[in-house]
Length: 176
Ligand code: FES
Image (cartoon, rainbow, N blue to C red; front, side, top):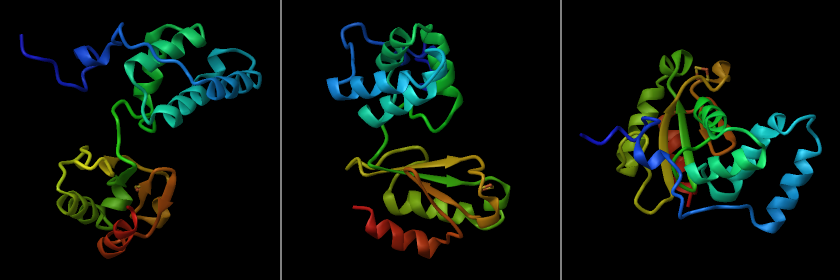
């Protein structure tokens, strides 16, 4: 049987490897315990816990999904459902700079595809890929909620608005 597409939830590498257990380092576990006190139930702390996971390891691996499910007394399917619903959570390792180009309507009519295609060309990556040096990942995303300042590119947690190919080129030169 052919391998399943990697984005398919049933693809083999989307299941935790039983030989690779993960757990928060002590200082992160302390932070997690403190965050937990702010919520009425463990389940309510799921989103902030996933943020902590991503800050700690850069992405949310299947092993981390299992770990979070144990920490919060949830099923792995519940945790995975949330991870896969929000595209702010990375299901694969990403580069140091995650370049998210909005190509939804307002951005599209403001030449977002020129920015997107120029980025892929300049960095020699296909859409969704990370450069060989691990520095940049380029992804196309749906509306970033800043349509009035289109086109918008999100780099990690920062928005860059009213972008153009030349502005993006200049910005890219600073991302080392
Ligand atoms: S369409 Fe790009 S931010 Fe809304």
